[in-house]
Length: 280
Image (cartoon, rainbow, N blue to C red; front, side, top):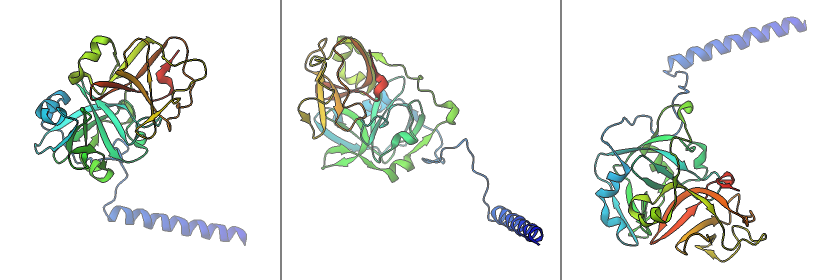
C-alpha cells in the first residue's frame, strides 16, 4: 500500500513540475543568463566613451576650490576597472576606478559594494544625469551634498547608470598595476589623485611595537592619520577605526604599502584596502 502511495506522489509531482515548466515558458520567462550581472543596467550600450582624464578636463572649476559639484548633461560614458572597494572596511560607501588615463572615486549610499564590484571588475558608466565634483579637490562621482559639495548618490540611481563588462572570468585584479608613490609623483595632484599606488620601503613614524594604525587622535569622527618617515606631514596613511585591520600594530621596520592615493586639498591620504596591502 505504501508503495502505491509513493508512486502516486511521484506522478503528481512530475505532473506539477511539467505544468510549472509549461507555465514558465508560456509566460515568456527564460533561464537566466549567467554571463550577465544581476546588478546594474544591462541595457546600457557602449557609445561616446571618453577617458577619465578627458572627463576631469571638461569640469575644471569643480576641482579648483574646496567643494563643488556639477551635473553632467552630455551623453558620454567612461569605462574603467575597480581598483578599491569596501571589502576591508576602510573605504566607506565608495570605491575607486581607474583607466589608462586617470582615476576617480565613486560615492554610492550602499554597503557591501564589494559584493558586485570586485577589484578588477570592468564597468561602463553612463554619465548623463550624474554629478561630478571635488571633495576637497578629489575628483568624485556622486550627488549634491549640503548645496555645493559632492556626496553619495542613491543606490537606485547608481544601479541605473552602470553596467558590468564581461563575465566573472573577465575580472582581473591585476589589470591595473599600482604606480610607485614617490616625491615626484606627489607633486602632480591633478593627474595622480585617486590612483592605485605602492609605497616601497617606508616606515611608520609613530611605530613603537605597541601603537596600532588607529592609535592617536581621530579626524572626521572615526579616522586616524599616520605619517611616514620618508615623507612630510602632507602624506598620511588614513585608517578607519572600523577597518578590519584598524587594530593592527604598526610594524617598526620597513614595509611596502599598497592603496588608493586620494587628495585632501594639498595633502595626500593613502587608503589601504585590505590587510594584504601591508607587506613586511
